[in-house]
Length: 185
Image (cartoon, rainbow, N blue to C red; front, side, top):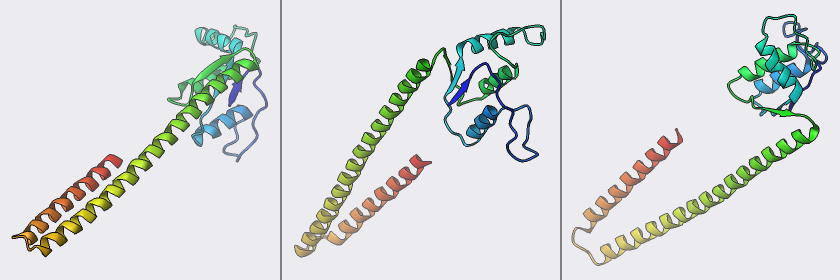
């Protein structure tokens, strides 16, 4: 969870000498670390700061602008950096903690509902897989019984028929395996 307010915060002195950047706040370093690990980030920007960010963008290059809600324009540069990311950069404005709490609750309810749906789908797939295995065993048993009966009653051409049907089954199995591999790719 990334919360951006009007204070720039403490400068970072963490990491190796080559990684040290006196212009980066601890919050910026934490954000960078979360991005590198591809951790989902919930970004909250105080509404007044976000409004002033728009003013900052409209007055780019004008050093005479005084900002009321931020103590350092590097906050705006950080927001620029966040918004320039191709993903994991959804911003929610807030006025008070309740705004953050309500937004997170809504997001987590959605994530939990998706998790439950996936879990239910997985149960259905496992059930279908078990039924397919059961049908496969029944089919194999019927094949064995049929072959036995054909041998017992010496049906004319039964060995050719058995070989032909076995070959068909093998071709269908190979085709299904191939299709499953392609669908995984």
